[in-house]
Length: 169
Image 1 (cartoon, rainbow, N blue to C red):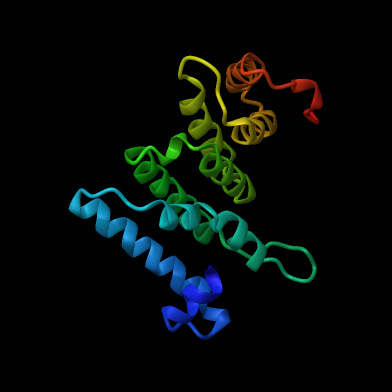
Image 2 (cartoon, rainbow, N blue to C red; image 1 turned 30 degrees about the vertical axis):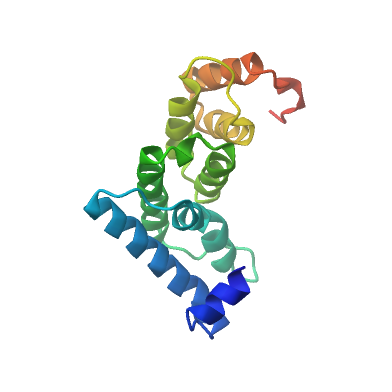
């Protein structure tokens, strides 16, 4: 997939191809939004993965993270913008997307944003299939000492049939 797409888009320099793909995804998302059209899932999923990709690209050999707070905030805002668009197309209801969003936000130290996204998911009636996203939000709420959110998400987690005893809290 990615290798052939890169060749088709003439992104022959692997060091720049991820950046070009991100620019393409952002332009696609914003163009669709401006036109009132729904953005396809692939650009939104790629944007949701930026926490993984960005945090991996920005580590020095010493293990220290070199990204500035401004850069981190830009990536977080971009992921949140993708969530708004994903909500319009119901992609936000797919657990694979929300799992990626939650993981990315946590990797970008955006615990409060992770909690907010997941709290929006768990307010719906019935079983919640967003297991990974709920787990990430439980860890985020624990780190942030947000006990109200922790209780809400933990209750939905258990109500949905998941075993909270296996979480490392």
